[in-house]
Amino acid sequence: MPVATAGLQVKSLDRPEETRHFEKGRVDLAHVGESVVGRATFQPGWKWSECVKPLAGTDLCQQTHIGYVISGRMAILMADGTLKEAGPGDAMYCPPGHDAWVIGNEPVVTLDFAGMATYAKPGS
Image (tube, rainbow, N blue to C red):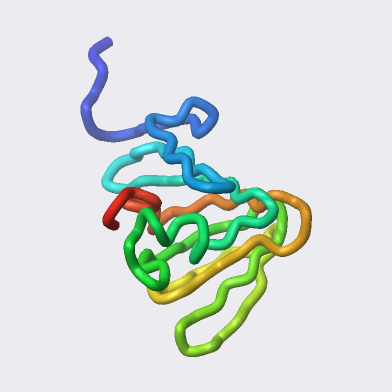
């Protein structure tokens, strides 16, 4: 049976098509349809402004994230001063203009359905 180039797709983040490493973290990526799904793992001590900012070249993260927290806890601080925490079972929407960091000693694992196409790529 011929393999279709469009239509139903199933891909495993356990066998990612791409992995990007950065200080105290990584993101595993799967390209599905028109989207990129990422599973990010942030180790204790990870903070966007220290670990990813040098790659992005911006003062704050400029990605939009729509995601789900699998494990761990993280803080998200928006440029306007809004601060929220996200933990296991939380779905989140995070617009551009934020910093984030791991809270505590457990790695944070998230699934991201929006902001991964260029996340942690130099100059993005």
